[in-house]
Image 1 (cartoon, rainbow, N blue to C red):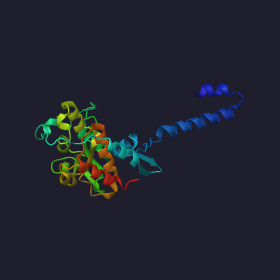
Image 2: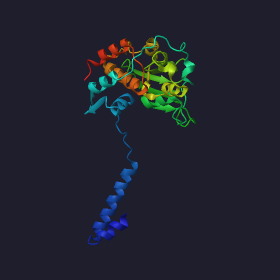
Image 3: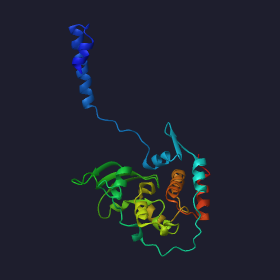
Image 4: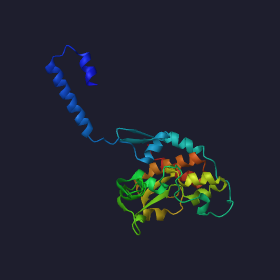
Length: 250
């Protein structure tokens, strides 16, 4: 690069050329030792909503495109089945936390790594097994310190926004085994959250909303997006609850 520059500017004096070379060397050194700055991107939930056109973000301000969200909601199939093909069994949704995306890591650890900061990984696991991290819990608005281990891992649990049991009652009993496996491990429907709050939610569908009121619109929009993606059949109560939640979003 430097030889090319000298050929192109032969009218420079020797002193000028030397100064230019010194400046270039300093610039190169600064570049080599300046740490990369992480690109600022939305959290996984907002990123998915933005990609779907349900949310716009401008100057860090989040706006909900309620027209698009409610239009998708109106297109969702109606749950008209009085009974499913059989009682719900978790095994119908395949292996728990499978490596569906074939990246070498199971879904639980993928989600912990995607949502938490200050992460450390277990050595010799190819950065798959999360040992520690900090979660800004969307369900409670609290900051949770995660430490992997017996009696501590439960502090952060991976929530299925649409619980598997609830989806089984809304059409998943007719899905293929592969579709159920993919649904159970799809990040679109997953969020690491406060363990006790997740336990209290249990198998509730849209009748339940997180105690963190500021997350209500995001939660409702995500429920609609997941339902639209998988063709989940909604009950009348589901629709009324989602319409009510979205009414105050903008």
